Image (cartoon, rainbow, N blue to C red):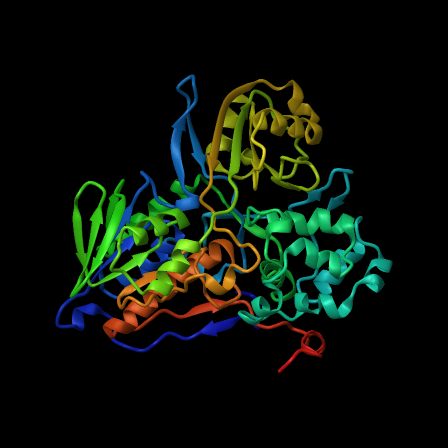
Length: 505
């Protein structure tokens, strides 16, 4: 919250507690990921009775963590893979401040270098934070960007990168893919490969299959639109320990009931909602928040023929998922070199996208390392299209980057493969369903749900969750929650004018 230009989204006025109503409303939240937990917090804090139904045995969705054991019965921690908690994640941090106002569950990572297939390194450490000076400083010191490249850029075609507003950027760029856009603006190929490919693949997509509008919005959120900087925090313990167990305890104190391992099959709407589980259990509610992944949302709506209007149902059915991703966690019998970064992004080294050294920051990994003298390393492969010998190929890339690991013995290994991330392909935005559905009392939340604000990834999930809660609170006559975003326009008036010059009114 250091950016003085951050935008405040005021809350609707109303009663501060549902206890003042003639009857306390009851809501069912389907899904206990970030979006569902934010919605549950927003509702429960105003006195709404909340049931949270979660299919998995743990909370957190795609940021889940759980206890595991190695083959020798050694207890270890496992989760869904590395996540960066950027300082721009105002609404996610708002949720997590419920369990620690000082966010003591985080540890700052002062840099995350990027390395390409030619061993060229980019770094974000020490960059000025004020846009556009930050981008200029990054370009001038980058080994893949030369001063002459600035002159060669197609300034008019590139102007949308510095003049982003949502949803206007989707009108301008959602029809083309990120790779084509970067080529059209003469962005240098080496820099494109190292920097923008790393960003695009954080959406679990190859640049040729990612909307250019999403890339521009992301560039705005993390770089040109915010002075929070590109430095981020990481959880200092496994996600269940650092985040979700404490948040569950907080929500339970506010009366939230968690039904873990409960899958929802269908929803019937009438004078009230009836939420039916796969086992036949039914839950009555005045309102429902669907905060599932894409496949779960499609499944529920498809099995609920009376829910919503036809056009809305078609939008839900058309939602797509990104290609699968793989997380490979290795427990090694010797440490990596002490100068290795906690996080290293890679470009041009398929199938590897990044390497995390968990014992640098995660409590459970650090304790294991101290006991054994080894190291815990995690490898990510996003947008997997060729899974043949993937584990072997990932390890080979690790040995290239950290040669000392080639002689290490693997004393434990866990491989997680999932295909549950939303797709952000060209043309997807217009038909993406928004938070508010045509069914009164039914709202959607999640990082695949449309919201016309400059948010992405975990912050989009949290923001849609809070918005879902605020919509229902307004319906009940209760006060909402104040939210924040980065500015929803480019900071340069000159570039904004350049970007719109020549467009039809």
